[in-house]
Image 1 (cartoon, rainbow, N blue to C red):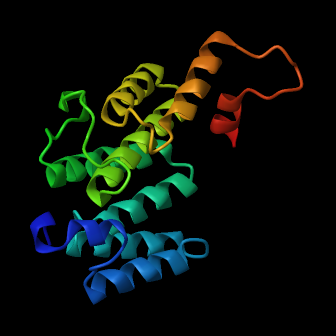
Image 2 (cartoon, rainbow, N blue to C red; image 1 turned 135 degrees about the vertical axis):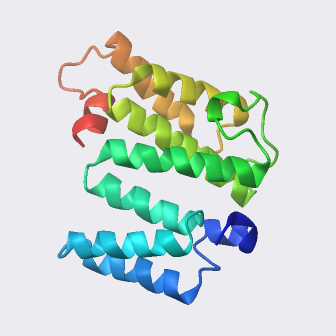
Length: 182
């Protein structure tokens, strides 16, 4: 199933899944805690049936994220960025997307998917101590979403505070420490 075979906007909301894909994702969720190998098999089945469906990408992202496999989660975010870019008619590499505000960042499902995936990518880059990648992704987010509908400004504040050690009170925890060890 390719992106043209389903309604992308509905797919971002987890709708429009073929029954087999929906069943595989449901089963993966049920098995994740008790039988992780079987959960992964179900995720792989869903990906085989609908490799570019947003719900499948989101399920993989969450699976890896909650298992603290942050590199794998970031790889899924990269894939999701390509899928989101294609749905918006943007260049496939986020660094090549023109730094101009995207239309309807508050209400368009495709746009919000892309922006939230880029925010997740930046967050994971921070967690993985890849500050340059995080900085660049957050700068791109500022350009694409200047009104900050997806809330990336807070993440940029955390990034900068971690770099400059901007806290005076020893009792106050550095937000980035919470990101890394949260």
